Image (cartoon, rainbow over all chains, first blue to last red):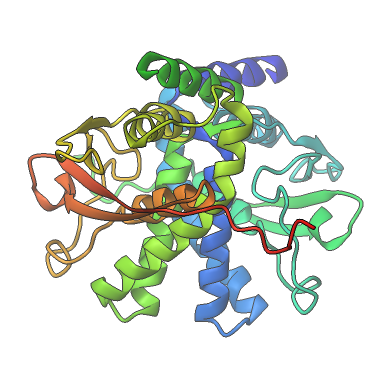
Length: 187
Length: 187
């Protein structure tokens, strides 16, 4: 499964329409700046807004992911983690964060990034450096995408190299496997 | 020259770091929405802001373009037009708008787009459809990039398929070839 998700991600990445990464970097930077301005430099409100925008994006791009990855449903959360790291991130951003630090129940893991295409050359101003989670859109994207496949998760930035941390890490915690809801009776 | 710029653009596009086009589409959409919100849905102010953001991006990405395109300086504005359409747009977005409708002096041309990766699946709300130039960031990018190579231009959206026009067109007008300025005397 591990290599399967990785290979599928790579094939999908090579097949999809692509644009230069610097354009995304700069457009994302403009978005963060605009949200900060709109919220009078309130980092906490900006983190929330980035998560919210990511959530909408995640709900959209999961369709593209599912359409291009034919290896079927993940059987458990370990497979889901692999699909996110080696499938989703590879397909959309060309990177594969590492999955590590599972809890005993296999319901929580850490995504560890050694590269982040959203942050090349970015420097946070001093008054924001320990408050803003610049790439918080990732948390929203993961949350939104997984909710569309009936997995409710919490997603939290733990470390960010932009803040001077030794790595960039997101903790993903499974909260609930939602039951499919059938709004109409099957007579 | 024509095929030279095209080939260079293609080689550069294949060589640079790339991301999935849908991510740029959705991130740009979030940016436009955020600017509209910040300007209380004032389309004219939003057009200006998108142009301004594009101008900064153009000033940044020209370096990347010049670093990857070794065919040397454009000898005239016709070559510049070709470098924008078949070099720059190809390198960053993977598309090549057509250059057409030159004026007699060869100082004005139209870029005509038959595809636009910023607008797939985008629909403008009715109250904005004839006011907002959704992709106006392009005008700023061209203006900002050319200013770094000492060409002052005006760049104006003329038509947009998003508005129901039969094509998407930007008019580019050379205003001034700026002299290199040497701020220090060469004693």
